[in-house]
Amino acid sequence: MEKFNTHFLMSHEEVKEYVTQKLNLFSADAELEIKEVGDGNINYVFIVEEIATKKSVVVKQADVLLRSSGRPLDINRNKIEADILKIQYDLVPEFIPEIYHYDEKMAALTMEDISIYKNLRYELEEKRTFPKLADEISTFLVETLLSTTDLVWDRKDKKTQVKNFVNIDMCDISEDLVFTEPYNDYKKQNIIIEENQSFVETFIYHNEALLAEVATLRNNYMNNAQALVHGDLHSGSIFVNQDGMKVIDPEFAFYGPMGYDIGNVIGNLFFPLAKNEFFDQDATFSEWLMATIEAIYNQVNEKMVKAYEEKVTLSIYQTDAFKTKFIKDIMADTLGYAGTEIIRRVIGDSKVKEVSNAPLGQERVAMERCLLKLGIDLILHRNEFRSGEELVRAFKLAKA
Image (cartoon, rainbow, N blue to C red):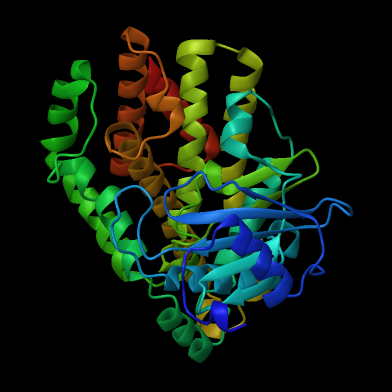
């Protein structure tokens, strides 16, 4: 249709016209319910459901401006998202929504509706537990990351993908929000409660050892095109139920260090743990979270070893010394990036609900300091940890 040959931001009625007349996913006379459910700051997300049959799809459209501030953004990010979802669907279809159509002119991605799964962050707020989570997310991480490296993928194809996934605007956001602003507040946008101002100045802003290691992690993030990473794999990008899991929203995808995705997953599980330990004190929930953190770290390590032996065939990469160092470096990166994720979500301007919604008072002060001490520890000593149990022990020490 000529109407959809040039990008514009669709209304509910135009979404209905788009899925019926442009994509022919529903008959023209179908009675459709359209709901805009995007709770983020970057895209517009519509669930389209046919009332009679309950058939449904999701249409995710990118705009040229950030929803909150009006900051210009390249709408090519939606194509990047569509491309990585297709790659990951081929690798682990059980964990990725199916892609039905990508419209480059409209920057609109139409895909499977996964409403039977729920946002993991909100589920953890309700203290719901998911026994399969550690096994499934560790499998997802190992399969999607190792398979897209030069060690496994054809090197010419991989280089082409590196070029295709140059994601300048979205990486620029992370380079600032994750690796720069929390350590010098150069934009004056950090949000720090008054009781922790001095603590942050001493242990973050003026911690030369920490700043040097964050610089190393930032440089690695920007220059190590190791694997195709999701780029924003927090608990809000993971949808779960008791039967399975889906990973969504990879608009920050690019070729970067494998540990960045793994560290984001692990780092974000410490927020509900800290909230529970300092405020709610549900022992069963804490035990499950600690066991899950331990298991994710340990299972990623174990599954990476096994997948490496199965997937990596080039003889130069099959020496034990190289394999051991390769995986050890990934796990060290994992903890470093878990640390940067924890710190930026506590003092940066893009917080998590577990922190921002926590009541002010001594418990909030103590919780934030615990998380910051943990983040610093993970960054500074990332090469020294050997197990998930040591990782949980570090949290307990930071809490003491």
